[in-house]
Length: 66
Image (tube, rainbow, N blue to C red; front, side):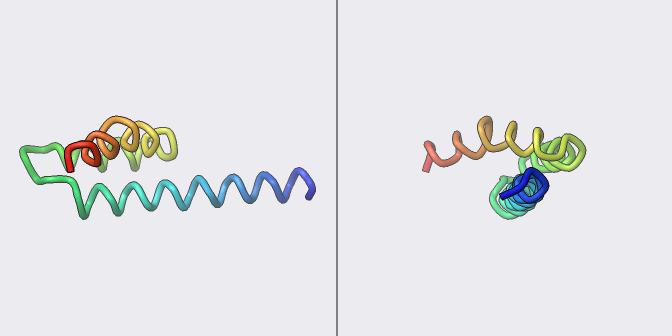
């Protein structure tokens, strides 16, 4: 596997994770105040880094509460 193929694979994985976190936020985040809107803005504008922030800060916390 060449370097270009590896780069494309990592980029596609990052894109899939980013889309997954947007869908998770839209469908599962409670609409209390502006929390959902703020998280969507963070995920969309910070892209993959924002998705990782959402995953570790909010998604994992929500799973622990369930």
